[in-house]
Image (tube, rainbow, N blue to C red):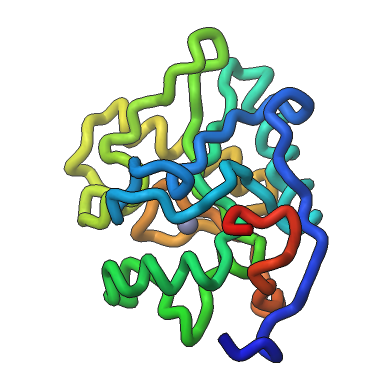
Length: 191
Ligand SMILES: [Zn+2]
């Protein structure tokens, strides 16, 4: 890793007890596309600006009966290299040579849950399902799943996030000047 490309930063860890946001870090378990755990620590952390925007989204979701469930947030470069080795397709995984917005600490993978039951809403596909049905505008999933995606899209957009068209679960802060963060930006999932 070319250390000069990376900035070290103190990240904000999402605290489910304090922030009212559920976390289920997919890469800390074998329940991800690679079929094995990549992270040692089941933590979700973000740049402070992204954490603020996530809390805004949670505050919009709460009064209408929904909660937020995070699958991934800051992703160390080492983890991005593992994902790239597993699936070196730039349409689906950011090339580590360019760097992922997850490694910039400004991207989050998430879904909505019913606040009463904690059950995730039907989004039509799983998180990290790299297929055409995962596009926000896919009409190949049920009408309910389409409506649930638009609900997530609406409240994340209102909270200041941008979406990418191919992944209903992925959101990132606007702007192109966010630096890549070093793997030891704390608290780090892989340390
Ligand atoms: Zn993502």
